[in-house]
Amino acid sequence: MEQARGIILRLTKLTETSLIVTWCVEGYGLVKAVAKGARRPKSAFTGKLDLFHSAELQWTDSQRSELGTLGEVSAVTYREGLRKYYANVVCAAYFTALVEHVMEPGHGEDGIYDLLERGLNYLDQQEAEMRALLHFERELAKLLGVWSGKGRPEVALQVAFQKLPASRQQCVDLLSR
Image (cartoon, rainbow, N blue to C red):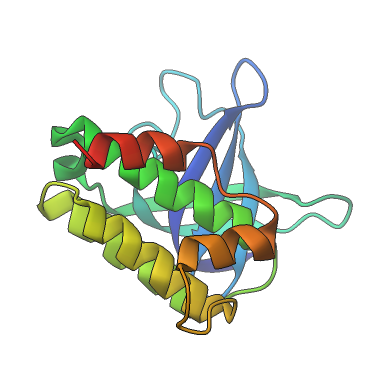
């Protein structure tokens, strides 16, 4: 059983009662785990699994696939303030989609985890701004070693990873108003 702190990036319905939870986990990178029974009304996961939450989690890796099994979850940070503004939610969704896009399972880059946590905490405390989006992209491009400091970091990310998440355009449109 593995144990670490993680941030929920994505929740995907697996069955009528279970979810696949995609995490950015400190020291482990991208982790996907099945939360068995999470969609049941009296599940032990009720109130603990939501986008952008940070939590202490335990999971078991699978020998046959990239999907582990989620054991226990103890929510640490709920980030309720992030949901005050629609633009903050869109920006947070872009941050998590971008991190999921550039990370690989089993490659724990703590700098990326820390950057995502700082970005989400910022959005939890204040209204999103274009400079926050650009700062996040710049820092991520530096951490990944794909930006030399010249040109635009989002272009460097796009070149290195073939594309950026589609949610970027919606985020830019909202923050440019």
